[in-house]
Length: 336
Image 1: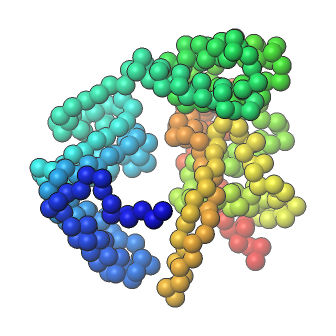
Image 2: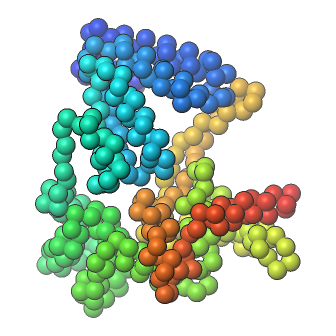
Image 3: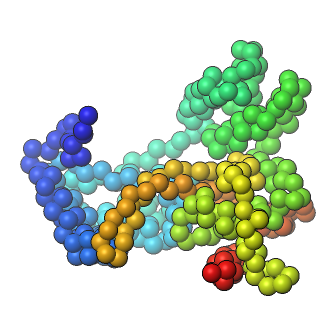
């Protein structure tokens, strides 16, 4: 059944959806029908105009402020939007407890909710129960073992959802009751310790592949498709005989890339519209490869990884990583 994109179950009787569309259509037209990107000032102006057409409350949600790459500028933007002083505007921001965010937004906040451990534990319990019932590799266990898994993970999580996700990934690899029991009695205590174990488990022959992949995903400006990641791993910008792209290094099954770093990378299937200079549009599928969580990037650039006795090889330095990406692109282009 077709759903009207302007449909609102609680419509504002004083607001005409066509007005919102007209502001967006005008901006789209000004930018050569989407072939050019609008500036930040143009986007802010359009948003401000649209908000001004509503008589009912307008809600804007900023999720995971702590994961924003240019946090300082984004916090300034929130303060600016708050300063528009619309009586109908409501802002909601979520974040981990970070001092700069708290200090910047402190004077703007009217209500604050702290997600303490106990509040999150019930959600973790629901998530773990669902995984134990629905996942083929976890549902095989008896009710007693499932309860042991559930209790152990909740007790060790300390409110960290991401930690639980990684431990379930590790438990899926257990092949016997003995391995399961051993895994549950030797769980890593922190998220960084979890990532340490993932890197330590990488075979010697895959270390270079894993480092290339993690550097690229941590520092690439654009989205990285699965097919592009395959090309990256087949390219050696520092070959003994100069930059090299080797077709024989391409993975036969691109999804095998996911086995390199286990829980540290993830795939997302997207639909994307590609614009041709002649105003031709093509809708296509895009399989994006990303770091599984923002904490993975934090870990890769952390001091603890840089000074780790066994894992400093994987530490990502901003300058070196960007240099590697540039050299890889040049090495790839030289094949043509």
